[in-house]
Amino acid sequence: MKDTNVADDVMRAAVELFAANGYANTSVQQVVEAAGVTKGAMYHYFQSKDDLLFGIYDRMLSLQKEHLDAIIERGGAVGDVVRAVCVDVIETSIDFLPEGTVFFRSMHMLTAPRQSEVTRRRRDYNDTFAALIEQGQAEGLYRSDIPRPVLIANFFADVHYLSHWYSPEGPEGKTLLAEQLTDLYLAGIDARAANGGAR
Image 1 (spheres, rainbow, N blue to C red):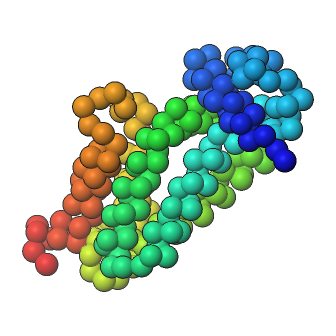
Image 2: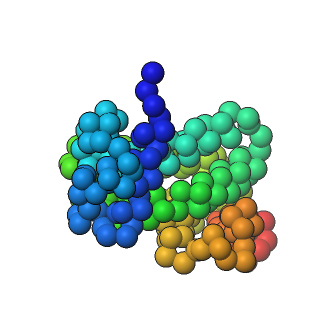
Image 3: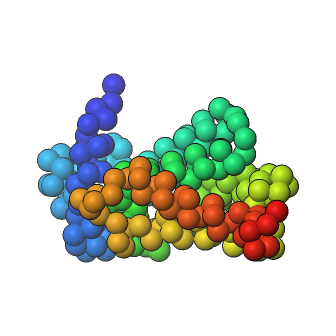
């Protein structure tokens, strides 16, 4: 049976080192020393430093996709589903703030196959989210005077920018912040915003 604690220790050490020194300036040897494991133990879970960087993002994205699918499966009005999805993706992004910060700063250094895999995974999430927005537009909830990709990019730009200013030690907890950002986003795409507030 695999010792998942080893993988967690390696991942945690990698995130800390990549954040402090940069991905390019961190060696595999530094990661294994910080994790207190051997190179052999690390290579049991991660084939390369590239694989480790991908794994950092994969863990976060996999969790967010699982949550997205579960929220949709529960059903309900599309407006409620979209709101729940938005709150969740902000909360989980805050939970994985160090991982997200490291990944977005270093993703251009991934090998081409890994970059393609990241693109595919992100597109899968994006397409599912886009389908919800499309349904809301069809029901007259969300504005259609702005292209759907712009509406979607507006939300995820805020999510990706979190690491530049949000601090978990700040006065607002993740749930309150997630609700506030979601309220701002949904108010901006509300169909009433396209015609001065009147349906």
